[in-house]
Image (cartoon, rainbow, N blue to C red):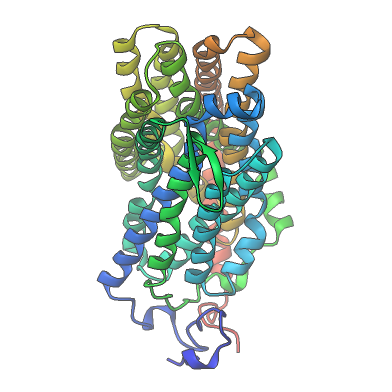
Length: 477
């Protein structure tokens, strides 16, 4: 095995891949302690990213009051402004991740989103707040693809799933902790309506909240510098990657299977995005809870029961696949959608604190239950050489519909449909309840098409594998 020495590369360039003629499995993997250290630190970064992302939703009331921003404008800041740029920078970021030091790219991303979160605290209007949110989105867009790439070069395939599962748990933990910690921070700073800071001047309590949650990210960025950049490994399919046109043609030939899969999970994802911003507002506006207590109730449901949902959903997907049900991903999505219907549609119209809180438990569990199933469905349905592009398309829809559309629809119905901020609970019920029903219909319609496409993909993958040259696993000279 030969490799380019670390000293032979330009500063900031990616470490060398395994050299020509060397089989990927011949290079030693990083020590388990080093690999798991990387996963844990990056999971903490993932949790922090959601705290910085979600805290805006807790501050809807004071921001609207101080800056004169409407309900719908707030939903755009939280949803579409973030989602469009979060997904839009994916291609150039992926290009950079494939070529340069991934650890350093993550450091820049963490520092960027943390700094931009802090800058939200000095915004004086909608435009300035929108620009800061764009910066948060661009910075956070770095973390997941870079982590997946580094994990793939740090763990053998039989352990990769477990490593990525630990990282993904950061999603419900991050959203839940964002609501809990964010609520407590807001409660703490709200003891005084204004604060005077050096260089900045007098700011409101909500602005200080952004400054306080943004600062830890700067420290975390320095911590990430202690993670070693893993050696890149050549993959056996590196020479056979499909063009964008090939991938689009493949998906179009199986459009019913991919439409039901991608739209089903995207629409299902709307439920959590409704509750993590406007579910909290229901407890504040309708049930008259203090913001910290409302954030705590919704946050606990997502952090604790959402984490349990991810683990159980992943276990059930594996169990069904082991039992021969190759459409397990769609079945898990269908199970979650059906189970959520009464709770998503009923939680925010009950008008009762105890019952509404109890309804949060199944909502937290089942919104996270199918997190891994959608991505798994894309993987099993798509040949290896097309999976990265198909996954990017999947994530595009999940983010635009889940993060972008869900908050906007809820806010628009509240502002233009009911014309009353106190009707936010009804708006949540309409959007979340309709999403679960629509997702159920998409999964039921798509199940037979998914099974048929899965069989066709298995045949196509076998044929392409048989046609690969014997040297496909080696690097080009």
